[in-house]
Image (spheres, rainbow over the protein chains, first blue to last red):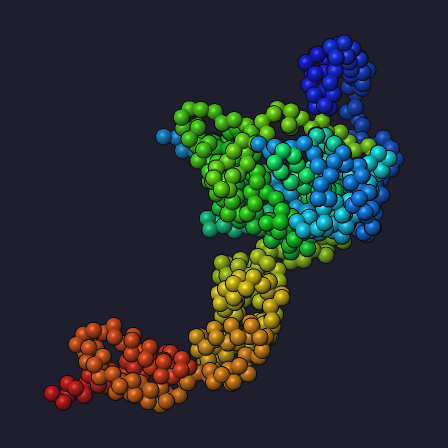
Length: 96
Length: 488
């Protein structure tokens, strides 16, 4: 299941990663190997196996709908590269 | 010329009215006026090392809606990460549901002017809302108060074929969310948000054409206008032999047009995968049964009951049941005074009273007029203790002051004059004072009788029984005419 170099560039773009030509080649090879490895699963006959949502014997715990105090605004904004009027300031986002 | 039929489906997002967020204990605040980033923690901003925990009430609210929409509830459903980069998304992904949603395959029934409709519901799932962006010149500001608020997504099948269908579906769904007390469903505040996908096909065809997704529909009016525009635009393209582009468009309210939004192909490449931080959500069937048993009477059933029990028209019943507090008010008024016709109560409620409420911008459950006072008022009009004009005056006064209608009628001397002799005296007095108009009437200008009627009502201070005035006036004019003739 070979990935093309174009697919690797597309995936890198989606993840906002900038790859050198050497990395593009290397990851094409490595990702193809990984897909081949995982692809072995598709050879297994699963007709008699019910769909599996998770391999862990767990169910999601639920919490009661109760309010907990939040950290102060200044603390949260300390994670902002830049802030203004109590908000995170980011490069312009255009909707259109 | 080929004739096209629109094919429309809706995707609805509703913020759930829980106290805390979907996966953390931050309070859900009104993000239109709360201090920015005041209800934000390390979980809803996706700090490393934090773990989400599902809010039980959010699941319960989602189940209420799914059951009311006749969906199949999944005993096991799975949360998934929807990956994309946008500054309103602190984690770089949104926790949503993808392959195994909470509920599927339901429907919503409603009535339109063109008949009954059943719109199929494809799925109902839970996710978290994103933050809010404020665009400024040269930069943007982000408020994460809304980030992580429980969001219910409801997706319909493309079963709607007119803007009327869409409007009634959307209002019915909003009404349902309010009945179930799971969301304020306020459209202006963006608590409920509608997106439509629209395509055209030749009438009679079963194929689906290329669709566009229409966003930024901030009111029902905007929704109808945007869809009308989009149907017209696609029709023009197809008529000229062109092809509709599959794209997302936004409604521009000021210009009255739809404009293409994101066109990047990768915008829809979300690379969903199961949320590793959340095991599957298991729903106990006993819990589902309990919620089903506790569902309130829903708008559709209530409307049908109002028609059969109170003999209202389907139209009047639909007006009354759209908001549950209005329906409850109506029933309380009817129960207080079973002798008064429910139709009369409904007419006064949806007519004069709605007018006052709208004008004052007051919700009925905040009104100073109790259902009991309202029923007494309508009963007085029906018994002809007061006439309709006085009834309006009294309603306005009790709406302002919250007083008792009976006391106001007494205090202001509004009791209707029903005594035939008193009315005949007033009629004779008016005719005697206006010989010129009476002459004109006999000369053939019969419309003057309406003016004379007005004069009698005026002489009675507006309190005379109008039907009696009309009858007496007619009789008096007839008598005059006869005595004139026999005198000649």
